[in-house]
Image (tube, rainbow, N blue to C red; front, side, top):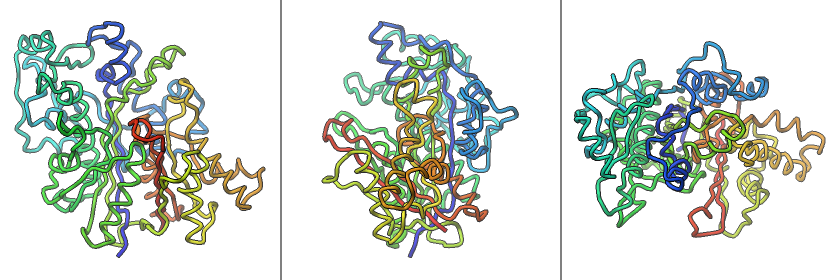
Length: 472
């Protein structure tokens, strides 16, 4: 049995009033003794988010390769007439996302002011589907909300600068149940469920048809006794109405989405389930991560969106390209964690085992970080660096001449276009584009690869990585 990729969905959620709760802005506010309500002034409007060229590439209205032809800076060259919806993607405004946050909350953590309640989800069938049958809504008096905030028990929630509610902690001595951590977890759940709903609605799949859900979200949901116990996958499945789905979380920092794809395909190929969904919700901690570099260079804050991805894999061969598990790369613990060592383990070696060359893959989807976000912070153009390394391996293998490196990169690569949400840029945002091209007959194969920074957990100096080939 073989696993096939049937559908993909990419979503973005514009959350300008949550940027203040990103890890970096929050730490800066605490260090400088700012009030929690302090925020950045140079935040973008929803229309600017929709017209931003990389965002249009992310949701599928613009081929990523066309970004090279758009003048930079991209934030000053908004695309006229841009739509917040596409064949496989969507962008949601903050007020609608607040409704999803409340729907995701089953413990009375989110408290909205009865006099300033937002109208809820409008214009998004995918988001509205998550609110059907929800009974979590409850209004609170403004004085109760302010009192909790002043006692340090809750974080304020804002809309266009005005206080509309709060999110409260659920334990006075458990940092894992602190208000900001719970908000991070709820944001990941709500945005992940939104991505899953977008996939199901867009493809016409009944939620009850889903057998298994694997979450590759970054949040380590738990409490003081089990900080990363999970299971966010099951919580997302429940919210999206997937009543027949079990699930599990897969963690490996930024490499998790590719591992999750491999695990999902392996479950199908082994006959354990007939279909599986891989889903990743957004990382609130990474909002505003490089904001101070952007502001120092006169740029707007570009890390003002949560990303979400979802992918549907099935055993039915008529539904899409196959996930070729015979060409799945992995970075072993004894391998060097250098860029070349990772590229060899993830690309050269699995292809060589199958008797294929690096240049035989039509498109490589690497870490697709938007360079306009990365470069001002000195982090480099991550996607471009990855493609140069793959081209160098092709030169070393005698597949191309050194002077052909630019042509290789243009043919097999693309500009980065994903928000810096850790796991979200990890190759997988290209899958929606790949599916459209494969069904149109203009693309035969793509290799998805991602790396993970295991050293961030201070448990190992190792990096990590995974890859898999998807082909017709």
